[in-house]
Length: 459
Image (cartoon, rainbow, N blue to C red; front, side):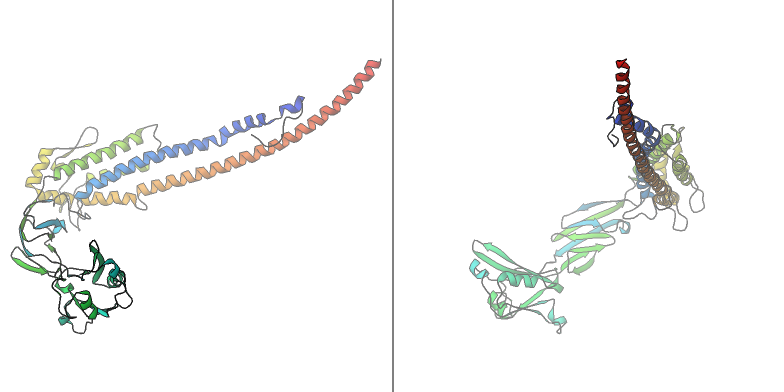
């Protein structure tokens, strides 16, 4: 409703009211603000359409990545490998799939790496929570004979409970400690090396060590409370002996984790069974991108504001897809079973493509991967699709332009509404003033009319 107190008078003043102002404002809003709102709604719909195109381009990008020479975090479609294993003494994983060597790998584990673990003598809850006060506990990590100048860490047990001592030990590098309940009213202070292997063994000594039961005379190990002795893993991989501090090895890209003593084997072979599947996925994603963009560009009802920019996406893709590649530029997708249908989409002749996989793998790699000096189709197309998302690329530029257009329209709408409100607020004030003036005039005329009526009635 417009501001101002209108319609107080009768007669002519009554027609200058808020209802009239609302009608005038609504009529003018249709010609000023409403068109801007329509444009904003169109951009909202355009953003949905553009998001669909972005999604399809991203899916195509993902589909071409297995055919990229510089694939990140994996292997190309032509370097897939499969493995069969026997035995459960170790588990195998590909730390670097590209580095995997074909053939058998045999592993014989004769000893597992383990930590050094000591437990104190058993104490009650009351003793556990009381002050130890047994002098110094010395702990050295590693073999002290290899570096006599390497001094052990000393922990003063004066005015410390078991838990306080455990916390102080854990705060140091190479070791940790905890107070464990091992019975109904039985607790032990357990000290462990942080890592496994002989190089991380613990040497515990001192008056407190003897009092707590780690050693018998302050230096000699109490075998009863030395529950686990630090040792290295001993394993033989393809005849090569390894003695390492952990239970993990990486050999020729193969990560080997020892689980128990015993023998295991793995046989790594090339696996070309996925090449056709990956290529079919690429063909499908290409057709989806082209179909969606063609539909939007050719449709009179499309919400796209810049169809030429969107059309350039498929132009760039087709330019790369139908180019010539290979070390001497003599290869194209049409040499390997990829064909165009009558609608401009791609089809894959599986028989022809799989024949190339079996008989001309170097040719396929030359076409799709190429080399660092002469990039192949997959490598080039992947870079092209990537660049579309970067600053200056068609997708990035279009999205930025759309965002700016939307922001400009919203600013324009706000200004138009403020101008309209101000205009009709002023008109409401004017109507109010006119209404008061008309009321005064009608009042004056009413008095004059009464005098005239009185004078004429006397005659």
